[in-house]
Image: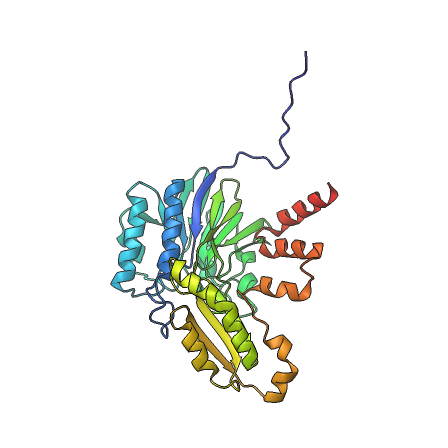
Length: 376
Ligand SMILES: [Mn+2]
């Protein structure tokens, strides 16, 4: 008799269960940019995708602040938010939230106007054995007292602050992760970047800090690739991508480069303008103002196929000719990925490794995986 095959599961095999869908910084508003009134709907389109996904999964939705862009939102925005959250509340799915500084209303949170939603501010909430505790955005002079109030049995803090370890180099922080007692995980809004980092908390405990990031482009220097999180009961998180309006960036130094770039991009821009649910893509062009009629020419091309953002740069004729090769190189899409081929040969094996690390939200696991693959 032959022996039965023995099934060996890999070491990291776990029966982890999804717990919640997590987002923040949705900044719901009708228009993205005041100067571009026909560029609209991006925040709604992203938010609807998150609600669709939450419904499909039948999970609670956790909103970590700045869900609305303004303290006094308009009726179109509020109506949209109410309609979307009602879809979840109507089928008895939890919608739990804290407030960010953008929508802050101390007397009564906007989201409390939707029956069935739940504020986590200074409240505990247990789901699948995980104890959540929330804090609305709290000014720097008061946040330390609030952090002291975190219950001992809390596992996850849901907050919306400027943290030293995230933003300390750029502005004055409210508090540090090192000030946070007890919890093993912080879900925090405010930092518009989608990432997970590891820190030590006040009790020396390991602390996983999870930032959902913004859900659509708030400034032109942001990466337009956006995500939200699917959270599991072992406090791991998966990134779920959001479909957003595409962005093209060009840098143009000469008349020839201008015409080349127009030929290069026109078809792609036109196709996207027709096929993408949000319509026209964004086209951001940095160009030397010494190129004759550059703005007129670009506006003419972009008229029906792109939202054009022009950035004229003072250009000196000699300098342009000297630096022609570098400046005329088009940059399709943004972010560090765009620059990678300039540093590493895309054919080299190190390129794919670098790209994986750049795209990873969990560097440790990705590195471990790369090492495992290398020694196999
Ligand atoms: Mn925000």
